[in-house]
Image (cartoon, rainbow, N blue to C red; front, side, top):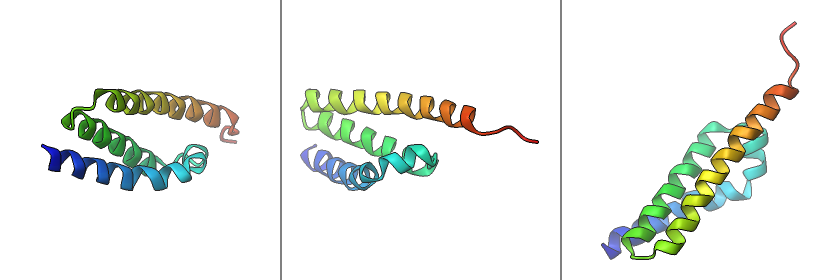
Length: 87
């Protein structure tokens, strides 16, 4: 289990960290593939921490994933409302 945990953590961080550096652009430009990759990386981190017997970091990453999904949804509503309709 420790090997699986370590592999999930390495893969999760390898995907999530570069996306975090560009997170503002991901939200503003609605980069759906990047956001889905980030959410899957968050899931890998949660599972990796749980397999490693560390529930607190798993919970923190799970909450972060849910909160950022909510921010993604709200940002999309605001971006859609700010765009002019078809003429």
